[in-house]
Length: 498
Image 1 (cartoon, rainbow, N blue to C red):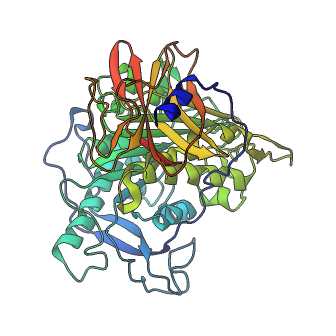
Image 2 (cartoon, rainbow, N blue to C red):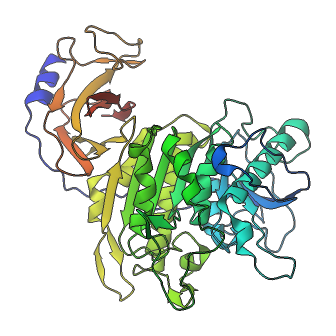
Image 3 (cartoon, rainbow, N blue to C red):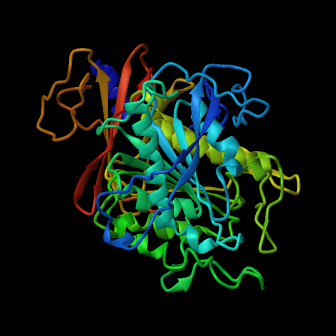
């Protein structure tokens, strides 16, 4: 063991260019089915945060639930609305985390069927409320779709499903949802729904992981975030004006996990608007536990919808919002991002697996190719930034090398620590706070820090270390200490098997 440690310390580090296939947003191991629900007596929170003062939820909430199912004629499909059948299939064995989906402005959950079914297929119960923007005259009333109202409806349907599972053993999903006060739930939102994520997280502490696809904001630094796209769209959507901005304080105080996806060809929630939300954490007091910003060049606003999945051009206010990437690439990237983040944080019914971030952070991501609408194939344009209490780390073995990476921001100083699985608990030979892990011990008691990178990073992104693997059949743990503005921050253990 000591010789292996010395080799790790003094080995020359170099860039590994071997390409590895990354998770591509494919359908998971479970079949999927769905059921429809109507909550005629929506539950309301005991108190509202000041940012939601005066908000009122809908008098009744309609929604759908996507869930892992036993394979049957109505379930083994990526379109699980039981087309051709009115029977909801039996749920798969197991207890699954709940995720609420908050759709975009003027949309419905059925517009995102492929995305929601893919998420459920990885072991999640996905609750998808329908926000009804209909005025008394029967015309669309977008003022009724304020993100604060949307969050109240989401809260009501989440609790409705949880109450049914707790109180009615005959309910289809009874015994298959974690409804305890210690449960870990998630919220997935697109556009306006992504803005509503912040309101929902303030209503129930169990909503601890947010995945926000192209979150909407009306102004950034006093300037309109959404340009005057056409003569028919000279103003931001009326129901969102101010509604997004009011969530700023909630975003700044959020302490859970939050992940942002931005599209480089998105005219309605452009990257600068998404980045504005991402920056709320660093500028606020919340300091999210995990925070990640990913921008995909050429991705349009509707990448997560079935229209893009099916190769349909979406026009909004006369403006094409498809983006410049092929429909297949956009859809796959949106589904990859969503499933990776939730599986890494909520585990699909199991424990966290931080190694899943390989699919988002590994350097071979940049080697993947995407197809432009013109038919030209080129490497993906992919940007990453992170600001977290616990750095988002990845670790994996490839072609005889141990590859370790961490997402970071400007001026971070990083210190990498490696451990080996002991099978006998942990040891603490030297006083180094927060760097002992149950089931692991230091490679050498005299070398608590196996590798140090003292220099500050020049820019945001991901930094990597590549080490040759000299032994086999070892479980190795990698953790980063990030010195950020003099504050000690440590990653969770990222585990690999050599």
